[in-house]
Length: 104
Image 1 (cartoon, rainbow, N blue to C red):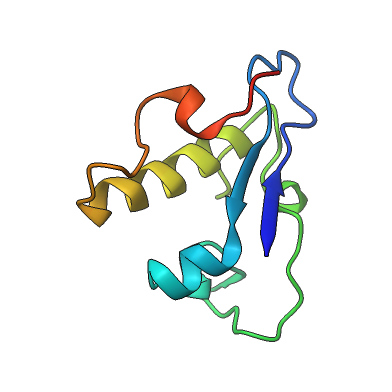
Image 2: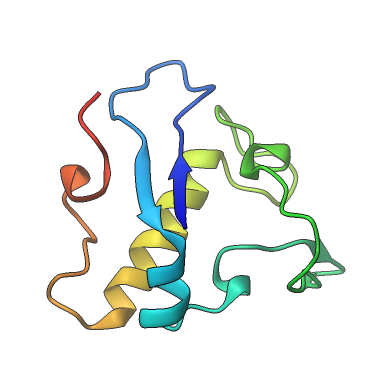
């Protein structure tokens, strides 16, 4: 039900973790599993429901871009903020850090 994105591995962790409702995102907001979960092969997301969910940091290094994977914070911010902007809802957080991050 609840998913927590912890900010681990950063040199400077200035913000607290992000907690979100997995069921609210999938059921109420109609987010597809592949909006967040992915496994790229030959430039295509081949991840499907039922596949193992890896920690994002498996591919996204907290400190630097590597290969084709952006650094972890950039990946989170790009994915989450873009989706929230596309939602068109005034209540969707997209630019204020404390709308998503708990106080550390």
